[in-house]
Length: 367
Image (cartoon, rainbow, N blue to C red; front, side, top):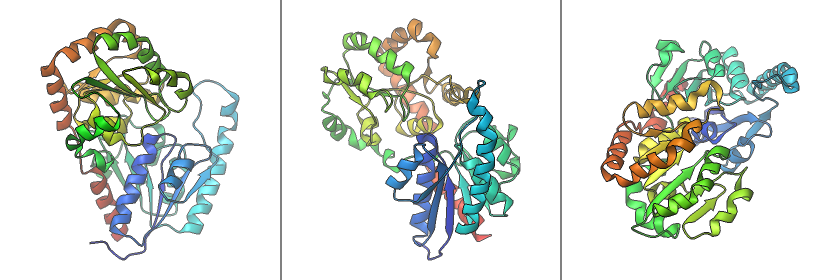
């Protein structure tokens, strides 16, 4: 039963869908338990969260913050000023909003916000999605009260007494996709009985995956495969021409991911933490192509945590030209291998993550 307390909850997560959607999922679960709670999100100005959070009907304030560039650039010279400005603004936001708890799901803005909250003795919780944490969360670990994680072995980076393994918050509509297959195939105007490939390169898209799919279109045709291809916002203008061909549908962004997963027989995906968690719940055979351009190569580490359980295949970007056709055609040809990967990846799913994270939030609120 929903409770009447009027808590004030401040959350920060952004930069990519992988940080934004967990924060929104956590907020939604808190709201279902405490309908009178007040929410405020804090993000980075000009990033995706400034658009996606208001769409989910939450208020958001922006900080002037970005990541440090890994090569020497002029942007790095202004980075210290951005940090000082963001810490100052985060303190002002905390002072005026007076939250009962601060929750961070990663992204540039969550560093200053959680630092300011913890410094003001506000109970704080981090939700770390990756198997290899970023520098911000490693620095915050000493300050916050609880750290909810999705993988084993994170006591290498975080104080053991603060760790709770919950899994990553994912969309609840993915829990029963088995019942939606026929409806999903009709929704996408797909042929029933024909093999369906779903391609997802993250919310902004992946240049290398898009190049691969474009190059292999004739090959997919010989394999009797139809394709749902989310090429991403940055690449849609370039690739939408292929959407007019007989077995290919090209999308900038897929709003109903439950239907996309339900329609798919096999998935090609990046290995962002939230994508990996979703794919465990979905239980379809997956070929991971991790992005090599992320901090500490954490996508490869996320994917390997699944691959080591014989629950997915992995092809590195540099091996695509040599290995892709061979691995893909072998997978398509073996119903047994598809079933094995699908069954094994489903065993890794942590389906109650959002509820368990909010249980921890509730304990901190009660203290």
